[in-house]
Amino acid sequence: MLRIAIQKSGRLSDDSLNLIRECGISFVNSSLKLMTECTNFPLEILFLRDDDIPGYVADGVADIGIVGQNVLVEEGKQELTVEALGFSKCRLSLAVPKSTNYTSVQDLDGKNIATSYPNLLQAFLDEKGVQANIHTISGSVEIAPGIGLAEAICDIVSSGSTLISNGLKEVERVFKSEAVLIASPQLTAEKRQILEKLLFRIHAVQRARR
Ligand code: PRP
Ligand code: ZN
Ligand code: MG
Image (cartoon, rainbow, N blue to C red):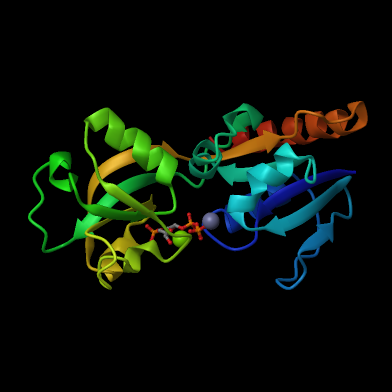
């Protein structure tokens, strides 16, 4: 039995479950159960917070996982990557209130920026030679300028509707991301074999989608 960790609720949840279903794997999905066993494939699904997925896979609590590159690279766990999956594409961007007169990234010098991605943001600011105060918060980042916590934010943008709803505009792209399949480095031979079977099906699904 192979254990896969996927996001419980968020941008990647539906895409991840759809991929598993399109692989011909059946399971009962109740929103209250955090674990479900597939009925026709040796796979067990764990529903977790995306931020926790790289850590669980690194520790071998889950064997494999589907997570955004944004979370993986932020946590410095790129070495777990098996392959990019081509869905849940998004970007990590800097945004400021619509009314801000923004001309370049230098405008952020000395400013406060709220984000859940301090490492990716710091690397970007270092590269641009900008010094800002990074405030790390774990969610609802888009609210920060409105409540006076920061002049700018750095968060994930997909459709852009969260930014618009909160009166913000995207001003810089920091990182491009999509869903990736990750695996624990210490899989048993038996688990590795199940992963190979799963990958075979994933590749067939990807070919059919193209
Ligand atoms: C991101 C981000 C916004 C949303 C933006 O959350 O924090 O909430 O997606 O999407 P939109 O541009 O389509 O409105 P994400 O699902 O990545 O993860 P989280 O719940 O862990 O913050
Ligand atoms: Zn998250
Ligand atoms: Mg969010």
